[in-house]
Image (cartoon, rainbow, N blue to C red; front, top):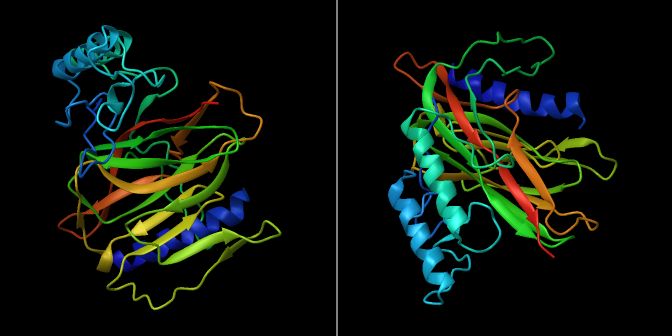
Length: 304
């Protein structure tokens, strides 16, 4: 079953390129060794709470009277909810409102730009593999996974990178992840510390091509496929065994070029494609069991 999953995921992403041509969870912190934290979690305790709202308000008030610099920096950037570069009272209010919504069991949204959505697997529409394999659209079995696409800002023509954070689960054996972005953004690269053993790319004529595996034994090394054009990243753990995860780890970094004619303040929303995305773990029967998951959209903001 594990070998079949490895073959199936690799075949699926390559088939996708040929065919296409083209519940609420609290955010968990990605604050690890100086990494950027997830939105709203100012103190890095893996929750959005009253303390985060208070800390944000303290920064905003102190900045207003000149005691501190309330401009965004590496420490306070999770508090900049409206992404205007300054920590203000409105940011504190947004965090407080988010916290209050979670208290009554609601699934809060940071804004209309960054939507939090829940995917139980019924949207998953598997790609044909070898033109014969089809899968039923059934709810994914495991629960608790949280996926967040980060934010970035840049000038017209610049290349920016948004990370993809994963939290809420302890083990992972493999995944098929597709990220969608507006057509005006030009995808330039996908990188990951998980390892890429094979790389799919477009040649000068726009046709998908695949580099051969080199010095890679899939029984001992991680196997991955990345395709910048389609936003696809497929990965399986070494030997098909579950990998233990670090809470809030970055599984991939997606880079895009902002269009030259982009306007100041223009926002490009980057999101998960749930019809092609699946994360899974092994259980005692060694079967691949996919996770239901909650995602927060990413945003690329143009700043001239």
